[in-house]
Amino acid sequence: MYVILLCSLVAFAIILDRIWCLRRGKVIPSSLVSSVNELLIRRQYNDAVFLCQDGQNSAARLIKQGLKMIGQSRLVFKDAMEESGRRESLYLSSHLELLGVIASISPLLGLLGTVSGMINAFGAVAQAGLGNPGLLAGGIGQALLTTAAGLVVAIPTMVIHRILVGRVETLTTDLEDLGSDLLEALSAPELPAPAPRQVTK
Image (tube, rainbow, N blue to C red):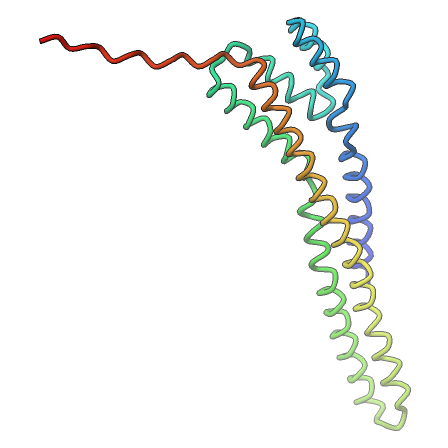
């Protein structure tokens, strides 16, 4: 029960942290994106860099990386944007793996507690004899509490974990779209391949 209680506290802390950090307004502030778009249209790149200088959100860090790659070829620019997007995706999904582990092991911890309690209950009955059936019933009922506690922790944790994973996927897709827009706006056009030389005989 103590281990299940500890798991519930850790899961609660992770859920609060991820709900706070995965707000769309915190990850991709619409005001920042609009301001940067206006600056890019006016080609005020230094002002756009200054606007993203603090890097307090994923969009600012992604835009800042894109502004560093101004003038690079599309291939180099695309690779840099994809690498930055992977870093932001890992940041957004941090601790979610631990949350999934807690959702998976909580029922098993409850089952382990139940099995342990059943062993103790039957051991007590073996010593006291079958003259008191209430002793066995009370021991079994107490042992089953750990299974119930494990399920109480696991079920909401698993549901919230799935919701948070879906939110991370949505935000990652939006960041990819933002990176694609930067790619089109800031990357240098690809040079055409040189025409083959005519071999004169």
